[in-house]
Image 1 (tube, helix red, strand yellow):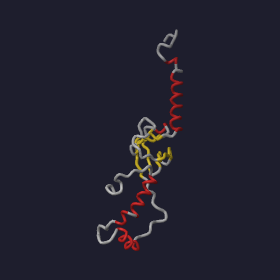
Image 2 (cartoon, rainbow, N blue to C red):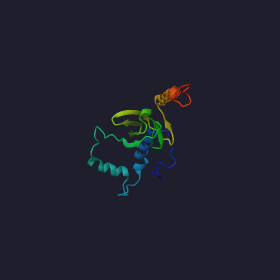
Image 3 (cartoon, rainbow, N blue to C red):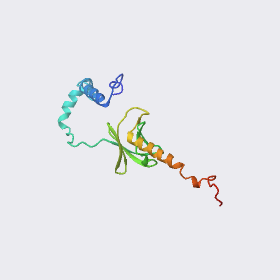
Image 4 (cartoon, one colour):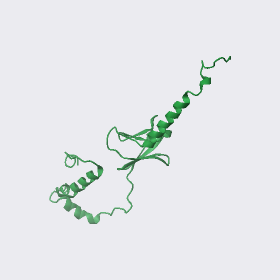
Length: 162
């Protein structure tokens, strides 16, 4: 695969990669000599074996990758060299990432926190605007309340004697 299929090949997305792989498997790869019996092609060997193969199940097993991740103090989960946002209320926790070829879902137990389109880039930040906006609003509220407690600050006691 590495030397014959991927060499000098460019793709723009997963669908294009799958289409190119299917074309390669049905054409060039199937016409090469069979390793176990070099006098016939891979296509011929497959047609001989096909009657003895089991059929695929009607309901295929879900092929999601699942892993546990620790979230730091920022509302991002690192997965596959990219950062995906979560609600800021779930930082500093251990969460679950479930990734399919097309999407990344982040869960806290059974609660779904976020669903993102999967990125195959490196170092990308995939964000849901609502996550960022909620964090910005929370920081704005905290900044507003920060200066309201004047009576407890030393030096602001005015003429009071203690």
